[in-house]
Length: 436
Image (cartoon, rainbow, N blue to C red):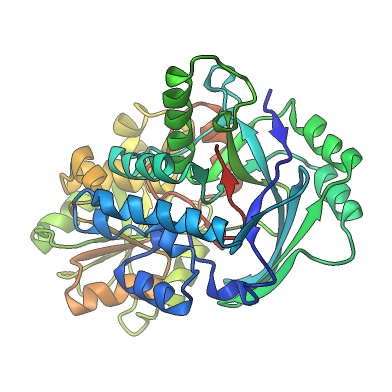
């Protein structure tokens, strides 16, 4: 049974920080060198100074220890100077986000609280594989700062949205914070009403929790818990490292938006065009897309017409036109039948197994080390990368559905990396959870 708890969050002091858009940031793993520079320039108190970004991983090297030391010193300095302050009582934080995606308006609802870490009970269901280097990086940062600096993004089943209704009724008239950044308006309310908090805790205690985003952060929290408990002279079930700060949202919420993550292959030795077409034809029916319609919207519309069939758009530097590839189930059965049904039904798994592994001979190690693979949520970026020569192949995908995510996770299986993109990413800097 998952245990959810309220907590005394640490947050930016509104008497000093009046513009939250200037101090928040996306999760560290999407912050490249250019984005990091922009965030540093926004404010001397931007959270990037704590979460650091992923520049070291981009360079393929470990992060210098001095960066972790600087983050720790900055965090402690902000606490001492009251840039960051602690809440006075245990709280659940009700978060509302209004945004537009793929031409639709959404309002995503959820709350931030603590999730008890208990690997033995197996009530938390991840759905993606993780890599060692990011976990080592985040673990070292946690050791230095002794805090959860960002939330993991989790989902739960609640067809009648009992939790959303309870939290909505318990809201006070004023928000804790409200700000708009990059077209996303975020509002956060404190929920301290014991009855509302108890409804949340009781309603979730017999449900599974699915990780939507933040798999590396979740596994890092487990590693930190194991490390701290091993060093403790006396174990206490309520020690702060036995919990991880998490964002919880209902899978039934109409505000949940999942976007596809398109693939690119860069610095890749593309096979001869004729040979490549012949190999693709073994497993897929192929339809050429008109060369007069190379706009991303046209190609995505073509893909949407095929939404009920396993399919994707394949673009290669040595093809005259993009191809709509649709799976030939019988031809691929010998390979896909070796996989669990929940995985074999995913476009992203079919792409990885049949195209990347079988046809292009990209190994699992190549995928894990991202020797060739690049990712983007912007189809136009993927198309332009092939046009410019920055990539040799691009593949446009449909979104993974929420029912597919829950089925894979419930079965204890793991999707390929970057199978889901829950939009928008959670803002880092709304709250922190101290672990000392």
